Amino acid sequence: MKLDKTIELKEIDPIAIYGVNNRNLERLQSYFPKLKVIARGNELRLHGSAADLQRFEESLGALIQLRHRKTYLTPADVDQLFEENDLHSEESNTDPYTIVYGNEGRVITARTPNQKKLVDLYAKNDLLFAIGPAGSGKTYTAIALAVKALKNREVKKLILTRPAVEAGERLGFLPGDMKEKLDPYLQPLYDALHDMIHPKKLQALMEEGIIQIAPLAYMRGRTLDSAFVILDEAQNTSLSQLKMFLTRMGCHAKFIVTGDATQIDLPNKRDSGLLQGIHLVRSIPGIGVVEFGTGDIVRHPLVTKIVKAFDQLPASAGSATPKASAAKATTEAAEATAEAASTEATTTV
Image (cartoon, rainbow, N blue to C red; front, top):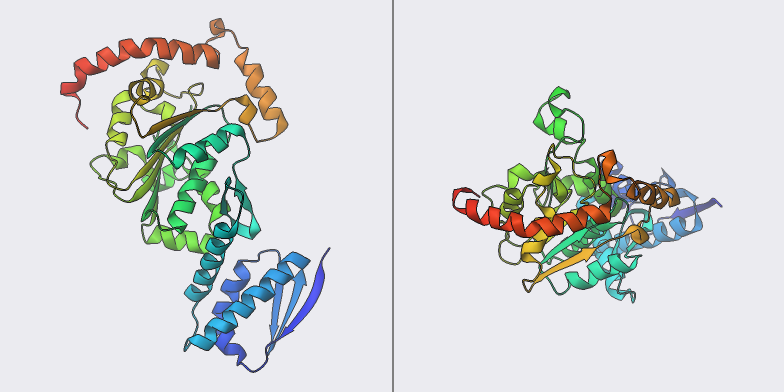
């Protein structure tokens, strides 16, 4: 139900709050995309839900109090105000599996047992592997943990990366420069960030290099200190690429690797190094592994049924079932490990 409300600014010049050309007011309104705001002199006429009306009035009151302590306000002050409110909300929350507060009051919470396991292991490990089917929330949960760490200043930057492997399409035929070719492939990472960080704030963080999204090849040669780094679609990495990525870890860094061993887009599926890499390192202290299943799928109910249907596809049809593929890959891991060790001296990372 939509309601109308009029707020009158008393004992303060409206321009001191609205800003030059209403820039502060526009930034404030951007945090309430479903709320209609019209400024008429010292009056603000609002139309929207009761919850949005209350939050807007509280935010406006906080902005007025801030103006009394400062000579003038800027749009950055509005952003800072909301960041501080988000942190306060998260600190006061009693649910240990509420990870971060997103846009429009969205609460990002670990919902399934394995999503919760990922949250628990994150607190105890600096490197995590999250593997499982599409729609199980492994990447989304990882990004939520990264955004929380950035907001809480546990890390100085957030880096999201994917191997630029063509899933049946040819990137070379796409229009534009390299960034324009790759951005659509990296779009799922942008989508998750847009759920959790206001678009204008996200753009500013990316322009400052605090949040980076790049293909895996761009990681070579870097040392990532005080960073939260997520490698997505890791089933499309070779063992040497995975080693290159993992050895980028610097001091005070957190790494999460996500992937689905049943959706390998490499020409030769045996080239995937994800399960082999997990087999090599999972017993090392400080490294955790979470194996998601169809019970963790949180998309449309049909997605679970679709995944189960494809699981029944016989190996003779050209694709082994996920369980068979995982078992086979694990069995072959020892052989692959020996082969990788023999080529270690000639592999450059």
